[in-house]
Image (cartoon, rainbow, N blue to C red; front, side):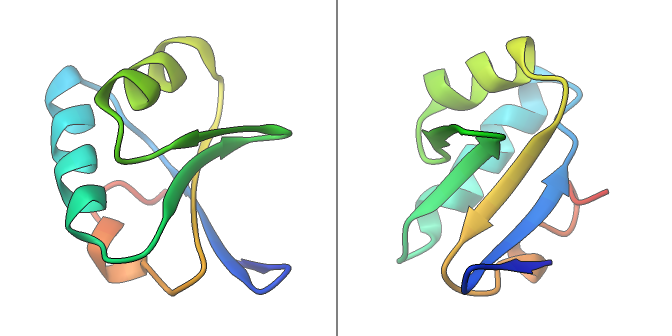
Length: 77
């Protein structure tokens, strides 16, 4: 999905291992990547931020200025 010239996809992070792999992939991206829920936005390259999002948010979206579908396709729902 494209919103305001940014790409956004709903993701599902079920386990702590999913969080670690998601952050590892985000860290390899040369552009900023965010996890988003409504007006809340956290750095997707932060283990603490993504863990908190997984625990507290009912829905998590990954957002980037470039199409990141193939990087995160394992988690996209």
